Image (cartoon, rainbow, N blue to C red):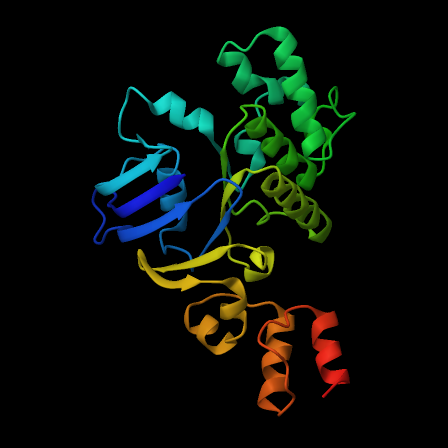
Length: 271
């Protein structure tokens, strides 16, 4: 489990802390969605999750290991994969298979096992057969999935994805979200940082940050059922949620849990 306990963080020279007294956790197989406007502290919290940053206050633990402990930092990072918003910032290989192999190879993984890890990781994100493809020839969505494969080859227990769909078209976005859902089914715990509530409608928990503090903590369905409150939190709600809310205000008894076009249509049909 990744546990953030009363975490605070301040950048040198900043007028206010980036994070202030934040407590959340991510368990294996769980998705924690982290939302909020720009500057709310989302990316800072993400980087605290695998020791890229160390908290100014409080503590972050990964399976009991303090991320501030220099003796365990590599153990922490082998358990917590990290995906950036721009995949080109972390693609280093001239071929897809070389890029995926980079992390475990530097850990000294034997060549036989390395081959298995690379093939398994590419298969997990739907890139089987792309082993010899040059990364610059991939679409943006495929590049992001390649970055996820590189993290998976490390065999992490957790994955932190910092706005992984921000630069993608609808097809790439769909593919990356599908890859994340598959990882969840495999038991990987995921911290998903995003601006879009629509990307995390099936998350176990949603946390909205504002000015470095938790402004909302609950389920995505509860937040979608109250678009007005979501807007005050600067959270972009899916069009389906806006429609369901408008129908409710118009007297149509749409259940709070109706979050898909099919569920809304059924509610209207039976009203």
